[in-house]
Image (cartoon, rainbow over all chains, first blue to last red; front, side, top):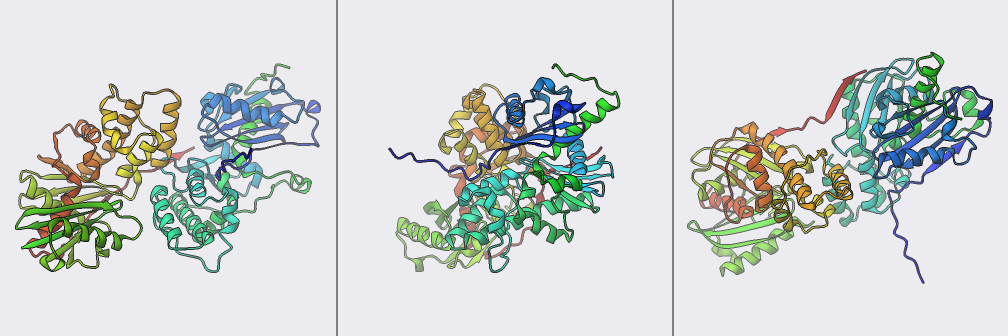
Length: 310
Length: 276
């Protein structure tokens, strides 16, 4: 019997990772950050402020379930249990429903702090391109938020906008960036910023015979354009870092940098030891990292008490 | 004198042929990708319906977002001007027009003579248009023509948080998972757009009689939501989606081949600002 598998072009693969060089039992403070977004959820576990484990998963229809799923997946390949965690902070749109968290902190604060850890203290502007929102944050050298602007009412410039497009042209979402550069000449951007109207425009272009890669270029350009509006309103200061899912789409990133006239900092760990060891650099875990770091700082300064059960 | 009005909209083409003010033929069909061709084919149909030849028609005026694509038109006028002429002909007491089509929501203040005094449109966003209803009807798995009947069965209003058709679709899916009755969801969809359309309408000022036209006016569930939101009576003429074309035909009959109208674009505040 032939099984027909329905291809879901938006379904990027879920991942998890455990640091082989850290023996958590020898560490003092185990903290976790759980970032439940509307599209994706991440769990990050740190031992004494060092990255120990993380997961990047798809958020389901239920926030508490999504929280458990990403935490369990992060710890799957480790012998650590949730009860071994000293302090856990929940963040993201679903933060009120993170059952294993002792408290919550806003995603804006967590993203800035996480970007500071990942990219270093020179960062002053963080752009988080998330699943259903887009945030532009100005921060100081410690990753503290100075001001921010957020769009969470319009799909243009968000991951959902890209997923809708991937489904329409039937190309896996992670292939869109690279393919958008396999063109002869940069085409004009899709004129509608609205994702729904952009879809109709794309259908028209497909019917007119525009090559698929060119259409991808045109769509990435339109998305980049939408995001520059947000950044220009905020006012940018270098160094500039990008976090979130769309940071992985070079098609959008490169065109964004071109329009802004500002390059974003390379996606490598600020800590040279982490970079040397080749630890995976996943732009979607910035929020979880920030939350886990806040938890660590609070315990160290005696502002929170360990909730470890085992 | 025989005149024709061709309204080429985002989703549909509407055509009206008139003789001395009386409608001889009325034809509508999808615009599709090739708009000029759609207008041509439907015009041929309209002529056939009226039992006329092309040369029998003295003037053809086009309107709609793709009005300029109509190759055989003698003139093109903006939607607002066509709407104004069409509405005043049908309902002389009209002073405010709300026209919601597939791709745009507009509000027009008119004089007793049918001149456009003020005009506001929703910015280019699917959330304030018929496309929003279409998208949500798919999420509800209900043909769009059934949305009105469905929403009129609702007994309570629930809020819809999404201000975007893309996010709204996900929200409808979660409401269905939470076992929310479909009539209540349909009503929430209509209430959501009604809210957006009302804010556009308030820019031009709401003066009686308020008349609604355009494809979405056929959705009586939406019209109810709009009346509730405005707190006013809203009149809907028969064949509300043909009123733009009728207005263009009326302009053609009056020898008006072009008109200038300035639009105020209402942008919804999407960006939230904050300090730490």
